[in-house]
Image (cartoon, rainbow, N blue to C red; front, side):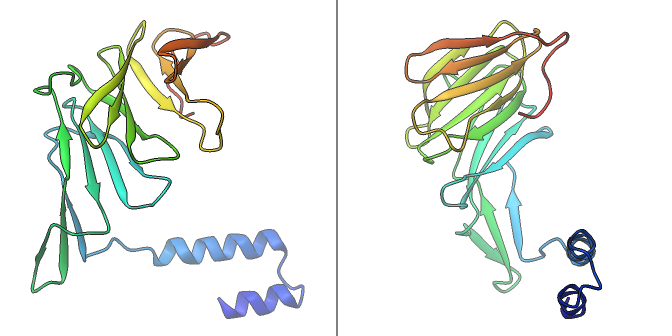
Length: 197
């Protein structure tokens, strides 16, 4: 890396070439950690993963078996291999057996952007659930017109609590957590909305 920095300082490397070389070197040396093991409670494929944006500590997962789980990735629940491998079991899981759990696959699981006290799940059962992390209870539910493929929230917004939802119908809906209603419907798509927002 020092060679690239020297070449950049002398003008031998353009900014774009410098960036490309640094990224390539980082990707080439990237390795999976052998010291951390996330123990999944899911019995089907995981469709969604997100680390919280506030502390970078809690991992949220949503799976095809209609379950969602939260892990503390900074504090291990157990150690193996003489203390060399940190095991991280989920702090809790909500699944089909939960009174307000989803009935079909969870396609999207996201954290509320400014606090780990809430998380949002979208499912093929046509529902978006807003969960209280501390009580594992649904505090808000939005019934959608079709399968929910993706949910998103702005990490910059401070004056609203809107969830953008991409579903199998041709419109993107903005769900307002504060009022429990749809605040806007965005038309213009010709097919189902499945892209990452």
